[in-house]
Length: 509
Image (cartoon, rainbow, N blue to C red; front, top):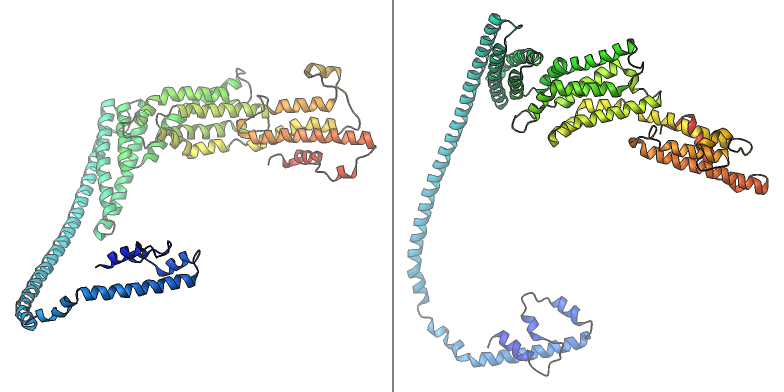
């Protein structure tokens, strides 16, 4: 009888307590400590110990019964094992022979495996050396090819010259430059791949000279193509710049050859109009930026569409930021510096809004999210925004708005609204400070004053104005009732002092 059968039979014994389950002892994960801790919550330890002793006695009795049932088999077991030592000796020799054969085979296989690994290592080393040799040969070949192509370019330039090229000659020359650029790109890749090889390190000065020479040639060709309006030649030059990874130089050429003349012509016309009296003598940016945008769209629109086209492969260029906006920012700052000055708040806010509208229109010209983000991340974008001193503008507006209210509440006696002020008294207010507060609140949100980037500052100013007026009212009521300010009022935070302090120089915070 198995132990499980015994446990089951005992589990069904009606004499056992309901909480004592012998089958739990057969669980593989049985834990005596956990079992005792679980039962001691509702069974005394003495009772549990007594029950376990009884169960042990029952188990011993069952064990004796099992032994008695199979006793004859236990006794006859040894009598059936005849000549065991001989059988073991008989099986030992074949097993030892098989073991020796397996050891010999293992040694042979290990020897072949070692030889195979050594052969693979030699092959890998040979392949590595071969790859390095091919790399050096390819680099030397490409270097020679680049120098040969540059020699052909020099010969062509000596024959045709730099100036007064026909459109076909310019197109063929830019095609040749594009071919040289593709080879230069290969050369730079090989040199970067084998930068630890001494022989390739010796080629680096020659490669740098070739890259510099090609950059100068591309700059001259792109400048000529832009001035001639030769779009095919411009495209070849841009693709050559992309191949050599020098987009910055191309952006600078576009800026100097195409954008700067457009911007300078607009500024020159504006200044000429002022001199002739046809335009007001002030740095108003709205007409200038509007004209600049129109000229840029006419002169650069096709080029921008080409560089931002999805299949052009020229998305690495950021002409909007590094060429157009950079030129506008620099030329406006040098020719119209007063346009950024917050000294005249009315002109400043007009110019600021015109500038933001100009940026919005530039952003609307972006056809992809990548181009849009590149424009916003450009140094010119950041430089253009930093020229607008919004904190200084708010400081001036703060004094302009809070000053009249402070003056009206500082009067020693109540002052009523005059007849001349009734035209702006839509609320029919009676006291001068109340009308001053209303005008100040209106000024905070007036179209010619409020700017969205300063929303938090204007909101705080509104709260300060209301607090100052409320303090003035409370102070007046207290004075009317008691004849003098109460001691508790003297301990309050004085909004008047806060506003007065900000009027003297802390409004820029």
